[in-house]
Image (tube, rainbow, N blue to C red; front, top):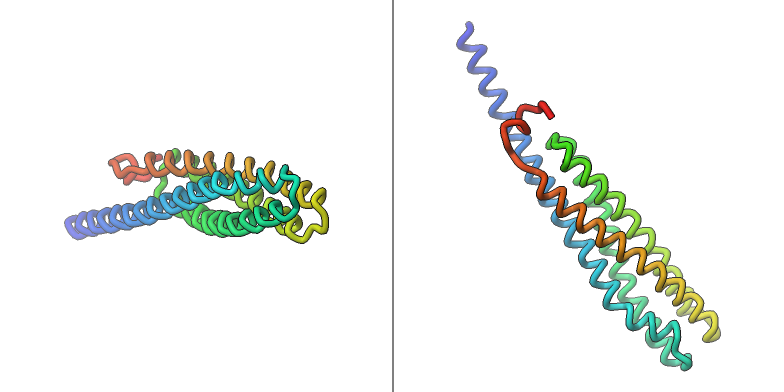
Amino acid sequence: MITIKTYLKVAVLFFTSTYVQAQCEVFKSEISDVQDYMQQVSQLSDSLSTAVEIASFDASISKARKNTKIAMLLMGQAVNAADEAVILASEAQYDSQTCGLQDAMSYTIDAERHTIDSRDFSTEAFENVKNAAKANNLGNLQFYMRKAQRLMKEAKSSADSAVYAADNAHYSCSHDVAHLSFDN
């Protein structure tokens, strides 16, 4: 009877550790995707900065409108990337709890918070770019583009912070004896 209990305990421990390792691999994949999407938001922010700058300060309305359309295209891509990152960050945050590592959970919560901030700033900037595209005069167009420019700087800053936190979360997820024992 004692040997059956021992075999049963070993089997449960084996399956539990395999499940946790699998969940941690899922977590690592999700947090890496969060990092990739946030890097994309950061790069798109850099790419659209020239168009936004020209639209914000140029004296020609035709040139400003042309650059507003370029900015709107890039902003739409940034918002989509940020939306995807928020979804993945939420899933990664849930999976980090299954992994059971405090550092991974903490960094994932930070990554999720920064990802949400980046998405919110990007969405608000996109709304301002859309308003600029609908503006009837150069003054209104430039007003909305300047607001979008400030918001995109905040979105980029949040995206960079999310990339850093996601990288730390990925790095802090490891499979050692303390982790598998659920003592943490």
